[in-house]
Image 1 (tube, rainbow, N blue to C red):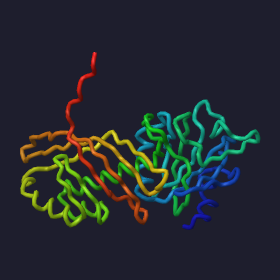
Image 2 (image 1 turned 180 degrees about the vertical axis):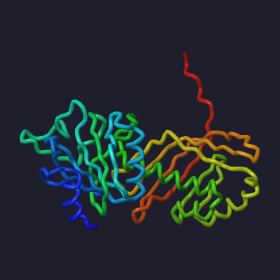
Image 3 (image 1 turned 120 degrees about the horizontal axis):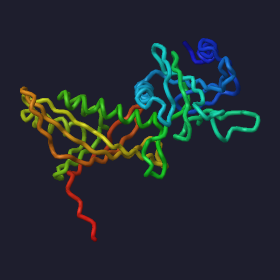
Length: 282
């Protein structure tokens, strides 16, 4: 179903009336509506793609804890009617005196709760309502949609390497992608990565390897909208046939991700072995 038909059909399907001008951006469309009881709401429509699914999973997990709450969802979901949570009369505190709502940024940040009901969706086109990254140490925070997209990218990338899908793993890097290992060894390009991994395959016989990433910090680049700098911690486990788990040393990794034809790829990876920090001087 095309977007205009969805915009016309979905509010009525969910018992809501359109109420104001639509807001649009890069990845989704937000339609202001009112519920049957007159409560202001907003219907967010997104394309049913990986980051949409990841964002919806996150909404379920957070369950309204300072962020939008997912109440319901239809098959193939990517659309979410949003309503103000307890103590909120409007979708934004800076709405105009006439009640107008610039709803495309209604849920940016954690400054109040919203509730969301998911619906079926089709192609959509805007940035729309998003969640803030739960890291307050950065000059600017990325949206929850982007945070979920990056996490999903790493989940798929690491599942490939853990499954010993060497070519599939290399395909998550740019053609000229580079990896600098903790010992200083440098690999450039997919072909060199594949050759190095093939040489290491005997080490992984009869063990299951799992890479665990956490504490992601994502930074955008004002000069290049397609560039992300990501820092995170890693832990690698190896499980043998008897179920014995061996923990490998931990690392801190710095990546540069770039977007090519709408797809995230790793352009650069620098791996640092974790070492004890010097104690503070008394």
